[in-house]
Length: 283
Image 1 (tube, rainbow, N blue to C red):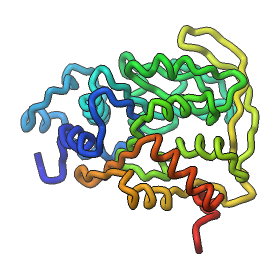
Image 2 (image 1 turned 45 degrees about the vertical axis):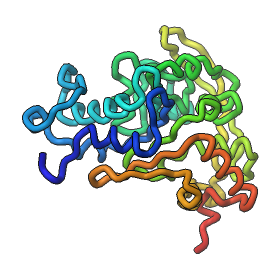
Image 3 (image 1 turned 180 degrees about the vertical axis):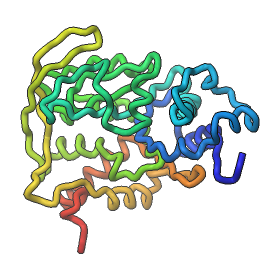
Image 4 (image 1 turned 120 degrees about the vertical axis):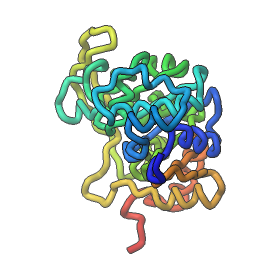
């Protein structure tokens, strides 16, 4: 190992330090920059010992190897009773494309796409905001109805993650980038800078069946500075001791529970209706 590399156990230890435990439901937003700090395959075999079974995987390249190590480092913390969930958002219906649960790539980054195609990983059926996941909670997440339903609504995958009080983990990315759960809070609160819009199209299910469906997506009002800016939320959660952080090499891991995000974001919207968007930032 050189001083510029980290081991997967460093990620596992960091997750334990921020409150993730065996059996946890984890919603992870992961940046490949964390995986990039793992050593090359050859160095890993010669310099470290791990209980990961990564060496048995087939890897098309060293990048895939590192992404698998990162995913397995998270899985090592939560164990078989835990559920790892990652955004596999495709935005298919917003682009007029067919959404194939099995084949449509994730547009949410390299780690997410690598996770989506791993063995035993399932995917929810939302044609805009799907999640990939592995673990017992996926049965409930994949059972969420889609046709005629609201992506960020009271019967969405986000509501299931809220009820399960998932740990929302940012692996090397900011809360603003990994803050999609906040749109569920905004929808429940009834913010005036988003409005409900219907999108329709064709979906292909896990079993290969084709269906026409429509979903309601609470979209941003583009006439306003309505893009998410969650720096104030991040600071508030941190100040109140709800956001835990740990450094892993050059990256930072942040963790907060879904309940804490919901309650804190709700209070902030009560106090200032634009507290979660760019419009609310003092110039």
